[in-house]
Image 1 (tube, rainbow, N blue to C red):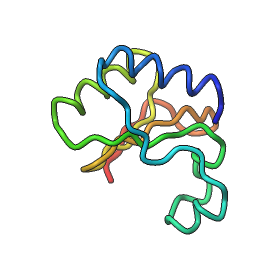
Image 2: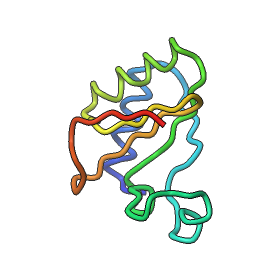
Image 3: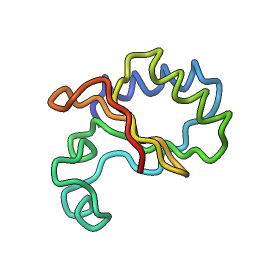
Length: 97
C-alpha cells in the first residue's frame, strides 16, 4: 500500500471516530481479476481501499471524514465505501455500485 494513502485513511479514521474495517486493500493482478475488479483498478497500485459500512450514520461519518482529509473519489455500495487516491483518474466523483 502507498504510505501517503495509508496516512490519509488513518487521518480519516481518527476524524470519523469509528473503526475502519478494510474489506479490500492492495490486490495483485490475479486476485483483482478473480474478484471482478476493473482492469485499471487502483487497488492494484496500493491506492484504494473498500471500507466496510452497513449503517447509515456510520456511512455519513466515514464519508465526511474522507472528504475532510482530501479524498474526492468514492464509490458507495450497500456494505462498503470504496475510496481511492489515484491521480490518473477523474477527480471529484462519487458513484454507486
